[in-house]
Length: 361
Image (cartoon, rainbow, N blue to C red; front, top):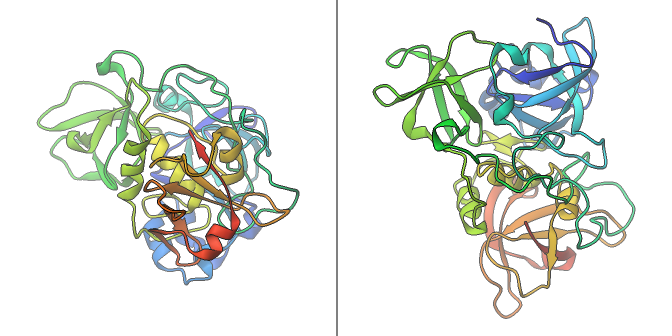
């Protein structure tokens, strides 16, 4: 069934890209627009400047829910990404444009229970206004680093992580950079490029090291390598465990709006690392600041967040604290716009000059 305005749908491809507008896409973007998108090839084909084209808003992973708000006869649909809070852009998620071919009806596979949203959440979402005060340092547009159009704010709307419940019934999450799903336990790959942080609904017990999972748009379960999956935790993770997930992405290429292990931006790194543990953070850096609690500088711990802004401007960058501060020197892991890579480093002078605070999730 084709997506219909006012109805929900779910992503049926490993990684779907959300665009500012259909007219904004470039010839280089064709691999990401195909019916079976090849995100790795798309990123590999871009030069340094094309990696930061602002036509990309964010990316959605297999099974992520959306609400359709508009359809066009040329195969484009406007949606709200319900699993990526964006308080400044709308009450229920991140708006933008997707290819209709990247969506399926939720009835095609019961994926909705695997993906919390800011409206119907089985676990904590941080998506609005933090007690620590507003995120903006001052009025002004977002700067590179994907702080705007929409990564977002505080207020837990649930008291349990998304994986609460009997272990056998918990949603699963992919815990490797990439995995493939197979039509049969010992068969060929039917769906490749499924990435870290993707949530999957179990469809039965494992067989010979493979686990059946439900996949949108497919009537029969596909089979995942059991060792590539973990149950979503029943308890809130320690921040250092989240940092360890992010550290696995060191040297990954920076892509504006990227949110996968093919390419990622600064706030996407934070969102994806916490998502691996069933915690939904906002998508954009300024909204992430609003969703988290400020801690005094020099009291930060590994796994906390550093936020950056220029005088009179909104927060434009976020990094993950990677070591306790010593003698005024600080280190962080972050997706760096300047180097176009995920790096762990001591804050250089220009970063220290724009550091506006440390926050705790």
